[in-house]
Image (cartoon, rainbow, N blue to C red; front, top):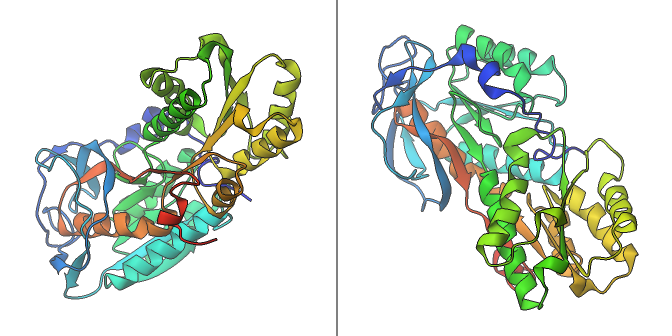
Length: 386
């Protein structure tokens, strides 16, 4: 099972995307097709069809699609915050190409169902493609298929940025098709997912407040974080923000008490083994706070904590990429907090972006979902029942 969060192989974005740079441009409001010099592709939008969801982050710069140059350009004029407003499509239905990375984990499946459903409800025709991550040949093949089918826009979940230059050569160079990157920010193209610095701050703030409520002392506390060497700096930046947020909330653990373990997703039971080994080498800490990218690592970490046999109140376990597994751990008391990304609602954020791009309106370089820390106290408010 692969997690969309953990298997993001991000390296040297500036070098990878230098060939795909964008020029400054004005934000448009509609366009006249792919052969036009106007922005967008000519999509006309009517009234709102639902209440917009809360946007967690609207990251600058903002982009507009230039149908003449077949690339995104930086928008000079744009709102301060993005309004993810799904509107009624007027005229012919645009054709959306949705490319998932494989639907190999519960979070990814939820995201796919949401995007396909929301796009169809908005009046779009949807073609679905499987990128079969970590395949290095399938992205180019699916890009070519999208061009042949004549998709008007693409939402894609390529998790290895090194395949993107060839990928964009096809969809932009051959097909003049605008695309939105799922889950991770990339240069010169809009993206949508969760903002990882915010994830780290959410975990850090919760950990600090919980530690203070339990009467912990920072000098007696260790912070153990399960990083992933394959996830790259865009995801792993969350681990820089966890201790900073803890300090900002009044619980600053000494630098020597922070341990960043490498729990690769491709390493069997990495979270369990690494945490067990850490306990063996560090038996003197009274309290330990654990953080992880996703439920896959946290499940193994929680198992290691339980087998260690220490009182449950002596540890705090928090992770991102909430899914069914992490919610089960929270309900059972094996995990204290899970950051909800609301994968089952991703379509509510990304479909408005598709509409705006095709209509010639500016969109942020990255739209972040609302982030909610789920605990036993509030989990039923967002996910009723079991």
